[in-house]
Amino acid sequence: MLLDLLEELSPLPFVKFMELCLYHPDYGYYARGNLPGKQGDFVTAPCIHPVFGATIARQILEMWEALGSPKDFLILEAGAGQGYLALDILTYLRKKGYSFKYAIIEPFPAIRAVQEEVLQDFLDDVCWYTTPKDVSFFQGVFLANELFDAFPVHLVEKREGELHEVWVEVKGGHIREFYEKFCDPRVLRRVYRYFPYWCEGYRTEVCLTIEDFYREIAQKLIKGFFFIIDYGYPRQDYYSPERTCGTLVCYYKHRLVDNPYLAPGHTDISCHVDFTLLRELGDKYGLLTLGFTQQGPFLVSCGIDRVLLEVSEGSYRDLNAVKRLILPEGLGGSHWVLVQGRLYSNIFEVKLSGFSLSNRTNLLLGDFSSV
Image (cartoon, rainbow, N blue to C red; front, side, top):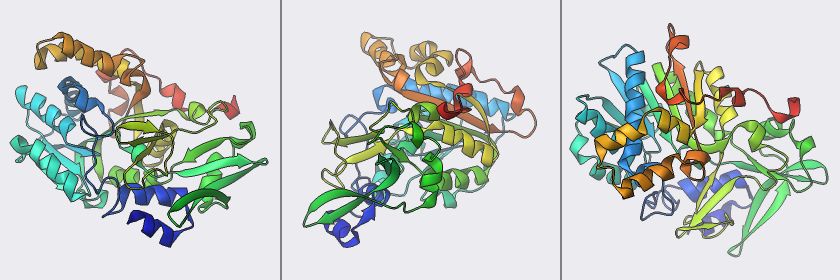
């Protein structure tokens, strides 16, 4: 059915194709209730072990204290998946004697139903919003774990010395790519400075949709933090001349595949995050970038070893899970943590434990073309 709709709308830029495949309200990948986890197409950190969420909760407590320990502190999460990160955070906080309000932005009823089931012991503390526009003004933390990688992207390719955007034609059930003018002039402006360094056939992505979402949340945050965890790169690595094939990642039936056109609506399509863009958006909307480092050093700095002893027996299985979360060859190296803040008065005095071993905000300042 989705294929028929795509054929009706054909031709369309890849960004629109990706949007429909993931977010069509009836036939999209997420509308079908597809979620990460042991039974899903891929596994995220909260599904590996509760110690991940508990360690995140420990850092959130520091953020709460930096705000002056307000009674109306809110944790707002988007991209909450099955709700396991929220569950582990709330469980740890309750064990420590804290009770914070928790809100989740979730547009799909099927996914919200799963979250409500997972969070059934905390329903008095949790509420849901359908879109960022529905969120009330708040002080607290906006939490996004593997959220921005799922935003639709424009595909661009260098051909005969010029930049072109990838478009998609669907005809008779068959999908083919072709190259056309840019559907949004901002795409060209974003990458024009980099393309002289690229070889013929170089392909990469540009995400424009993040800004609208980011702005909506930033405008609702009175005081507090953006706490972002995702896989991606600083811009100088993202658009490096050596990264000739871009960063798209596709999963179909638990398998990593290299074809985003395989089974539209049944294949998860994601893209690495340009963390320099998030730093720029913070500058634009009044949030100072406080810390940036890989997930491994961040969790170690937060005391994941001590948290593990609090939430488990420290078995061999538990230790293996921690290794997956912190080692460079696992999520500890592929995922990065970015924290931005708005406190008005003492923002420059905020020191978060997660960045005590490593803080690499300098990576978000420049790009290879200016070196």
